[in-house]
Length: 97
Image (cartoon, rainbow, N blue to C red; front, top):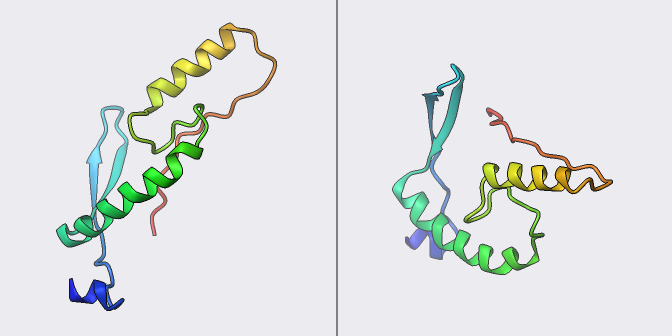
């Protein structure tokens, strides 16, 4: 941790793992090292406290306690209300390096 305090820390490469999906596709995951995770988690928690209050209630991507199924349900409810605007629902894809 001395490297972190002296601004010399460089994160290790993330281990890449492929997991088979039920539909026949492959899900690619990145697994950080234990030290990397110990450093990332408190930073993520602090940034979440700072930025989460500024997010729209209609934002579901990569947010705590939010998921794709909730986004789909919200879109379905908006369609049933016959609202007159468009909604963009995108599932992000993993981009290999």
